[in-house]
Image (cartoon, rainbow, N blue to C red; front, side, top):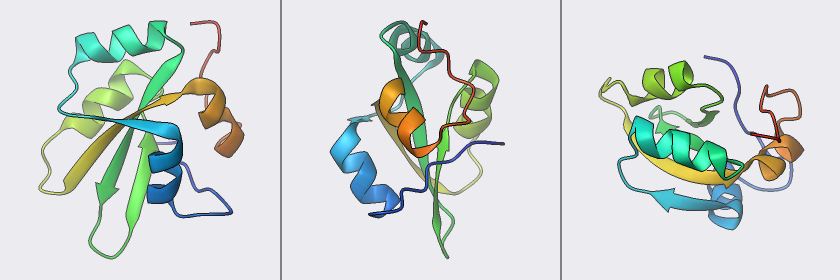
Length: 96
C-alpha cells in the first residue's frame, strides 16, 4: 500500500475532520460514484501504536483496505484537490 496523508500542522484525525466527510461502510459502487465527484476515500486505520490515513487512489487499493484484518478502520470521503495538498505525489487524476 502506498499513499498516506500526514499533515504538518495538525493530526490526521483533525485534518480528516476538517476536510472529509465520514462514510459508514462504503462499497465499490460508492467508491466509483465519489471518484466521479472528484472525491476519494481515505481509510483511517488504528494500528494500536499509531494511526495511518491511507488514500484509496485505485479500486485495488480500496479493496485492500476493506479486508477485515482485525484493525479498527474509519472511512472518509475527501476532495481530491484537498488530498493533493497533503500528498502531492498521489496518483489521482483531478479530471475524473
